[in-house]
Length: 113
Length: 111
Image (tube, rainbow over all chains, first blue to last red; front, side, top):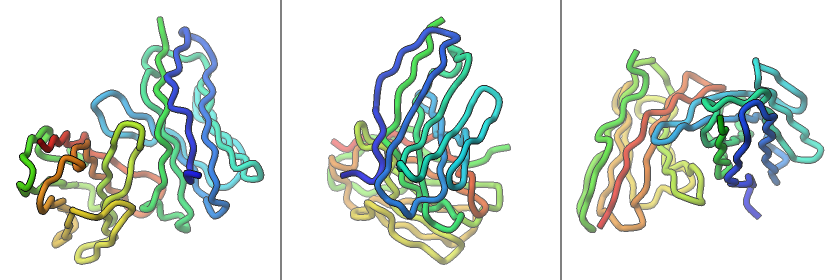
């Protein structure tokens, strides 16, 4: 079993839809959870960062962590065509130093106008 | 602000050739790393460095060498290129934690 599982999609939604992206993991030592967004032919950029369980909201984006279920989610409200990208979950157990991130394979999202 | 700069953007090599992928950052970050990204495999850590003079192996280090003589630069060397090293390579840096800054990538093809 891979340490981090992420459905690769592709996921296609109409503009304005609520999008739910998910990852599961097997390593109970993971404490730091991140979502990166990667546009085509670009490097990933950090979108959300959370520590341990709970929710974090930033504008239209909400990151949710459930450590008891080893499950993390990213919700996008009122999705826009500019949200079309690959979304990568990432995790770390390195005491706050994220230099040993374990990434999911990424989910390709297309938001149609 | 330049951030993390990778060169070249594209490269084609023949099997057995060697080359160096360059990475430079101007943010005075201590931590730098190299990832490769392959379809269906996601991002995998090759090597990383927590400061000048310090390097360590990641998940997939075989066939690659790194050195860190300055804070700014972290080159990745392919010793004898193989078709299995065809990939997109990303360099990243960060101050300590929380936010990796990625370069725009080098697309490498080994024939």
